View 1 (cartoon, rainbow, N blue to C red):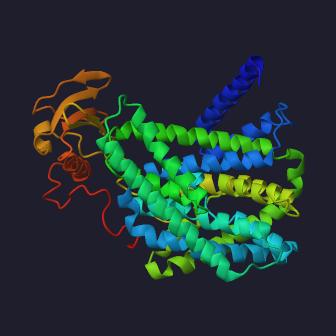
View 2: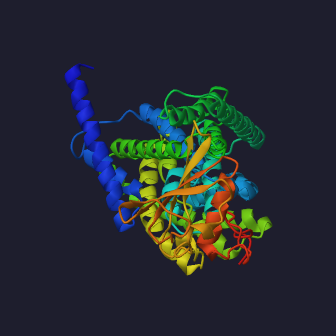
View 3: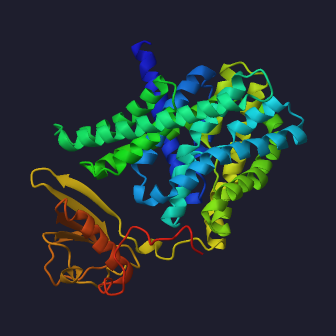
Amino acid sequence: MTLPELYVTLLVAGTVLLASIAAARTAHRVGLPSLLLFLAVGIVAGEDGLGLAFDDVQLAQALGTAALAVILVEGGLTTQWSDVRRLVAPAGVLATVGVFLSVLVTASGAHFLLGLDWNVALLLGAIVSSTDSAAVFSVLRALPLPRKLTGLVEAESGFNDAPTIILVLVFSTTTSDVPAIGPLFGNLLFQLAVGGTLGVLIGLLGAVALRHIALPATGLYPLATVGFGIIAFAAAGAVGASGIIAAYLSGLVLGNSQLPHRAATRSFAEGAGWLAQIGLFVMLGLLVDPSELSRAILPALVVGLVLLLVARPVSVLLCLLPFRIPLRQQAFISWAGLRGAVPIVLTTFPVVEDVPHAREILNIVFVLVALFTLLQGPTLPAVARRLGLVRPDALREVQVEAAPLDVLDADLLTVSVPEGSQLHGVAVFELRLPHPTVVTLIVREGATLVPDRDTVLRAGDELLLIATPETREDTERRLRAIGRRGKLARWLGEHGTPEPEGTVTSG
């Protein structure tokens, strides 16, 4: 590549990136999932639009898999272990047994309703069977839902990519309609066990290293944190295990290890995740030929309706039956099974393997993802309200971030007082924060205020506090408790835990 060609490439890439960011803002304002507009940007920039040619399926597969790794590392880093630790079992069942059930039901619908051969039907069912982590993370975290409910869907989306990829690879290379169950199960067990173990071990190693090694610049901590997640992904893939689950679990371990510069790391990871999503969806939009999509609309509708109305509800009902999760929450989990980049990336595997009808499968999956994301994504808030799952106290939660003060061995906490919070009207001395935590500054209506013990907090205030690492957790709990129940929170039995027990299993 010559220097002028580089300039042109960077100009095009920067323009597409800014257009995608503008699309994300537009999608947020109108309530659409961002991935739809990212795909639209790719289609508009493609050969039938602005003329940007891209048809290298093997390159798309490699770049798409790498982008999924970044997205899953970011998802793990921004997931609270307290939200998912009691949900590992149901999420694991959904990600394994649920995927198999979904594949069988969807493939049966494609076979009997569309007349597809069993091998093609099973391949199509496997491709669309998993929920997509990028879509789930971006949509569900904007909803005021119980954390354990959100955590269950997020954990499932992080776990189920590995079984799905295994099934897609098997159906892309097998010459018979139904592969042998024994080798398939053994392969699945190996990939999950080894990938999960490597992810946890590398995450723990990274947490120990980052806590005990002083890096010369703050900006290196986020880079090193995400780097450990990428190493976990690559190490697992190199030994034939699941890099996807390794990336997610390493991110989960690192994100819950009280690392230095946690706020900066989270911000960097979110930015990297957005960049990966934008690049991934735009690339997939470039990959398809819009002139071929019209023929895929009918089969996409048939397969999508079977998946949404039959396969997903059946798999959720049967898998969650032993865990006594209320039916209304199961209904929401069924509707929240969003499809996104993962199915489209998975369609590149049969194309690379030159499987018959692979290109038709790509078009069907692309149309299915676009149509049903457009249906499910914007309706999730209404479904949650209709099922009575919206948290009434969601707007009163206090969001706390920490940035270590290395020299003082202390944490700088930033606290926002949202509208409706019971912190409004509470004096500083009434907070009764654990010693030696102190409120050092208040930002109010754009002006700074150094508080004294009698200063009264107001909604909209931004507080800066200094706490020691030993008292930070107690400080966060105290602030949450007062934010929910006021200055008498302790007397009222509120202790500021991240989420009351039994959110998923009650109601």
